Every structure is written in C-alpha cells, then in structure tokens.
Amino acid sequence: MIDWLSPEEWTAVGLSLKVALTAMAASVLPGIAVALILERGRFWGRQVLDVLVHLPLVLPPVVVGYFLLLGFGRRGPIGALLDEQFGIVFSFRWTGAALACAIMGFPLLVRAIRLSIEAVDRKLEDAAGTLGAHPVFVFFAVTLPLILPGILAGMVLSFAKAMGEFGATITFVSNIPGETQTLPSAIYTFTQVPGGEAGALRLTLVSIAVSVAALLASEWMARRVRRRLAA
Amino acid sequence: MANVSIRDVRKSFGTVSIIKGVDIDIQDGEFVILVGPSGCGKSTLLRMIAGLEDITDGEIRIGPRVVNDVPPKDRDIAMVFQSYALYPHMTVAENMAFSLRLKGLPKAEQAKRVQDAAASLGLTPLLDRYPRQLSGGQRQRVAMGRAIVRDPQVFLFDEPLSNLDAKLRVAMRAEIKELHQRLKTTTVYVTHDQIEAMTMADKIVVMHDGVVEQVGAPLELYDRPANLFVAGFIGSPAMNFIDGRLDASGLVLSSGAVLPLDRTPPVAAGSKLTYGIRPEHLQIAPAGTLGAIPATVAVVEPTGSDTTLIVKAEGGNLTVLLRERCDLRPGEAVALKPVSHQAHLFDEAGRRVATI
Image 1 (cartoon, chains in turn yellow, green):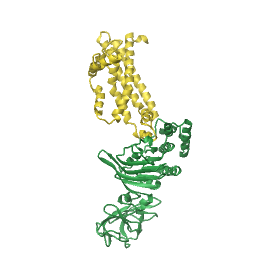
Image 2: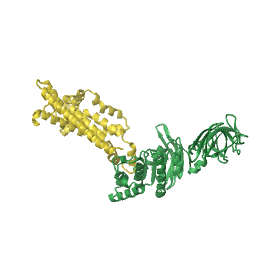
Image 3: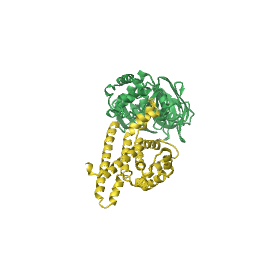
C-alpha cells in the first residue's frame, strides 16, 4: 500500500490534507461569525462585506493569489507587519497555502451557514428569551445546535475546495515540493514532465478518493443531525 | 401573579403605524383575549408585552414595574407560540426544564417540577420523546408545560390552537380554561377566532386596524356591541345589517321599501342608519304578516342542532338561525319578525346609537 505512491507523492497527499484541514478549521469560527452578521445584522456596509466575502467565488483564483502576494508577501503591508510583530510568515510556506485555500473556500462556507441560519425559526429563539434565557445562552443552546448541519456542510465544502485549490495557491506560495506542493500542484507538475502520466493518474485517483470520502462523511453526519433535529 | 397595564401604546415600523394608541387594563389573575382579524396588531401587541418588539411610544407595566426597556428574559413571563416553538434537539422533559435549567435549579428539583407539570397535562409517558414523535395536540401541551413550570407572573398565548384540527381545538380550549382556573395566573391570549374568545375569556379586547374597538365581558360584547365592527365580528353566523334612512314610518331602504321599527330611536329623522340584527333574533312568520320583513328562502342549512336559513329580502340577503328544525323549502315566501329589544341601530360613523 505504502509502495503504491512514491515518497514524494505521499508528501504531496499529506501536505494537501494538512493544508485543507488547517484552512477548514481556521475558517469555521470566522465563517459562523460572518454568516451571522450577514444574515442578522442591520448596519451600513453589510452589502460591502457581502461582496467582499463572495469575491473569491467569482474572481479568477490567480487574481486572489496575486492579491495575497501583494498583501501577505514578506514585503506586503500585512505580511511585513505579521513577520515583524509575531514572526508569522505566509509567503512560500504551507501556512500560506492554507491561507489561500481558506479564503477561496470562505464564500462556500459562509453561504452554507447562512442558509441554515435563515432556516432557523426565530420563534424558537424568541421562546427561549421569554423563558428567561440570555441571548448568548440562546445562541449556544438553541441556534448553534439548529445550524449545525449547515456548519458541517460548509466545512466539507471548504475542505473539498481546499483540496482542489490550485490557482491562488500556486500564485501566492508557488509549487515547492514538501512545503507548498499540494495534490493539484503535484498533478500539474507530473503533466509537465515526460513520463509523468502514471504519477498524475495515481494522484488523481487519490484526489477523487479523498473528495468522495469527504462527501460521504458529510452526508452521513448531516443525516444524523437532521434526524436529531427533525421537527 | 401581576396585573398588566398598557397605556397609550404605539408601534410603528418606519412610517407604517401598526398600533395606534392602545389602553388596556388587565387585572391580576384575569384571562384576557385580544381578538381581531389578521393584521389588526394583536400579535404585535402581545410581542410588545413579551418584550420581543420595541415599544415605539407609551408604557407597559407588569405589576408595578414599567417594562418598556426590560429584556424578555427579565419580564417574568412565559409565552406559548402558535408553532409551539419546541426545541427539536431536546426531549419533552428537556424542553419543559429549559427555564428551570436557566434558573440554575438543582436537577432533582427540576425533575420534580417537570414531573408535576407533566402529570397535570397528561404528558408523563411522553417525557423521553422528542417533539417530532408527538402529535400536534401533544406538542401544544408540551409548549404549555414548558410555560407552566416557569411559574411566571403572566402567561402569553399567541394563537396557540390555530394549528390544531377543529375537534382538538375544542378539547384544548377547555383544557386551557381549566388550567387557568387552577393556576389563576394572569393570561393574555391572542386569537383571530371569536368563538375561542367568547368561550374562554373573562374579558375580550376587540382590535381592528391598530386600535381597540371595544373591551368587555364576552356576553356584554355580544349583546351591546359598541360599533358596527364589533357587531359584525363577534357572533357566528354574523349579524345581519340593513342600510337605510330614518323616517316617521320606519327605516326606508334604498329600494324604497320600509322596515317598520317597534319604537322610534332617539335619532334625528332623515339620518342614515344601519339596522343590525343577529340571525337568532329573526323569527319566521307566515308570509304577509304585518310589520314583518317579507323574504324568500334561498338556502336551508340543517346542522342537526339548529337550522341556518339564507333568505332574500329587500336590502339584501339575511341569515336566520332557528333553534328548531323546519320544513321550509328554497323559494318559499316567508316573513321575518325581529325579536324586540334585540335590534341595534348604528349611525353613519358606525357607532351604536340605539337598541330597540
């Protein structure tokens, strides 16, 4: 089984999983917050935030990657600040790949959570208020359990998007084996060298397997949660 | 327990005015029903008492305390919603214990109070079930149980029976009334169903278009409606109305026919009036009877316990409710005799000016 892929290929697979899981985990909390703000908030600039969040969905990924390079590169305003103050570096590191993936998957995550927030019967939250619950308690005891299926769906979408992200990643952090060469970059590299077709095909199969597994897992979780929440 | 006082309360959404200055006094332990057609502002008013809607202007007190700026959780109320609003991810017991958990009561005390409430509502065998495993009536009972265990100052009900079928609604009506007689907690109940209002309330508040049309005991509203709206809204089948102009001979209809009046009302001759009479206050007399309204039977609706007739008369169709069975056929000519002291006269502004 281990021999089935070369060590370099295993590295790419492992790195991809690490990048995708990190991107997903890091974006869940901001995703819930932004979805709540967009769905429930009534403030000036909501539309602007909405557009900003959704931009990665419609912009060419290369453009997002280039923006990241400008902003989070070592000499970019945010990148330089983070490097000086906290020693955090994104450019040409796997963390940069995770950042690119998180941003590309963010609109999908937010959309899924927003839909589930929209579907929450406000009367359930009202009732909790009249029964003596503080709004923060209402959120954790009532709203959060009810939107859990949406959060799970969003997480899977974000993960799947991260597994497949190519344009933004390669533009921002390049294609360094062992550091930023994720599955798609590795497949791309294989297709660029003579005799690389077999490697490309192997990694493609891995990619398909991971995606299908993620989808099945999310369906299974969503079914369990739905059954628990069925009104 | 507490009284609730609503003083000149107003509510607007932007420029749209929903509640236009409402005053209601609810005594400690009273069962008050807000009733009116949809869009009259009754649910909004209830949500304002609950603290779920801001009060644009005016004052709401629960007990001695002005609650305008008090959040719902601190108003010491419990609300039952039309959609039940049960938590799908909690069992019946957990749903009912929700407010006790918030109060930080010991688990044993929580369980005891839930069990007591469950026993009184017949929910004991269902405590471990989830809301999705219950029927509509059972869910409604759980929602009530959840409110009862909170032991609030005021119960608020927002159309709690509207999602139930007719038979269950009648049963639950009696159950809620019995519950109130037992607990004697001040209750404000919203419904669009005037039968619910008539059968359950100590006091009915009829609302229409953001204002209170009349406040009174059920039969008071039925016998002495303050205006055309209340007269038409309370009572089923609805009151019959005939428009006309007062003259020495009686009420002259637009067709020129004259409806004789038993007594002369204290209104200037020549004024435009609406004559209102309830279907059960019209008696069938032989065609041609003097002083009666000539009519032709159009539809006969026997319900078993009584019979409803739709008849064609000058001034439009009239409904007649007979307590006994009858063998009238459509097309038959009859005469209708109004029971004296039961007909109301309303002026042009819709106010009741006389009952004759």
